[in-house]
Length: 142
Image (tube, rainbow, N blue to C red; front, side, top):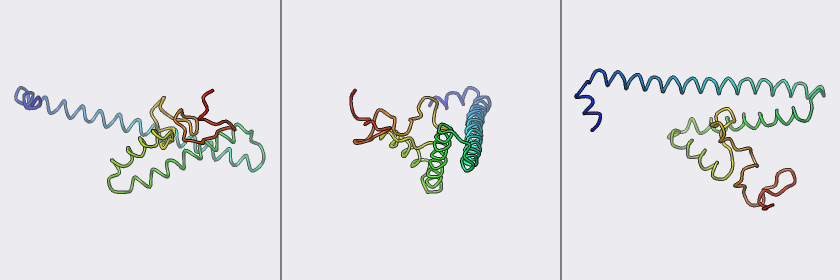
């Protein structure tokens, strides 16, 4: 109804503004995707360098843990890639992400998760019963 009123007043101007707004939204989404993919690419290259140095024995435990975390990110992205080729992917992927967060499991790679909403695997407040991290149960109230 509001659209019809605007179209009646200035149809060409309204259509141009709506088109410009949608183009800006698409551009912004593409820029965010490009930044996330470049971050994943850099982290994956660093992971491979760490694993190459691990073979020669020149890696600290902290670097190895960082590489293992990145490997988990790569596996998460691969798992979501399987769902991307299925029919109804625009419906199933957000559903899987939401269900995972509800269960305390981060499904999205760290580069694609919204800032501040990335759950550290196994460190969420909504741990499954019997979850243990670093020898401590996550379900105990201390």
